[in-house]
Length: 232
Image (cartoon, rainbow, N blue to C red; front, side, top):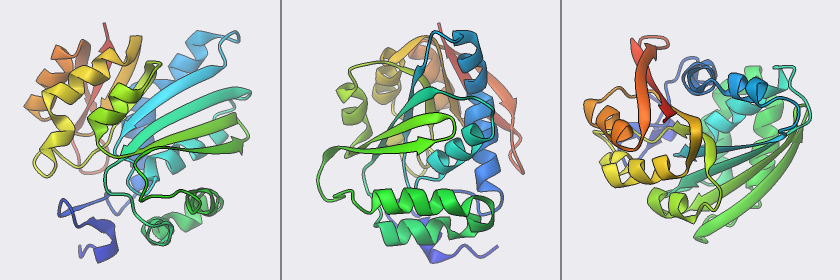
């Protein structure tokens, strides 16, 4: 299949996501894979705030999928803090182009995110915040423009779940280096989770060294397996 140029990150010569069913893929790998609904359920009614970390914001595909997933989950009255990082942020126009293929599925969410993202000063390093009101509650996006390790170290509160969604280890090895994975482990609550589409041996070993119990789970589409980790 010919990949449209606007879907390829020119910095890594790699596409942002699989062209087919990328929203459902995100739900399978990151939300079902990380057991995020189980985390919400186990926390009970007393806990209303949950923190998620993501490595690789890209065009916001995972955030779009998360909002769609939670909007239809029956969960209400919760607060999600979504911490993400992007070293090479796209313009809001390009974000709209990249996400256009999902318009039939999640068109209103695309418009919501692109409209909010258009106010982000992407040339300015550091934190940028967007707050969105959804049927499940309030979602706060904290987007770090810069390097992933800097973002993780800048977090003051550990995350309940991590979505490791950078370009693959061969295309972008710095996103999977042991130093970064160790920092992610340090910024994960006990029994917190991580999920990623890659099953590379170096990533598995890095997550284990970072304090996660790691297991393979069934993949999605043409991919046989993905990884899930639980912080010991």
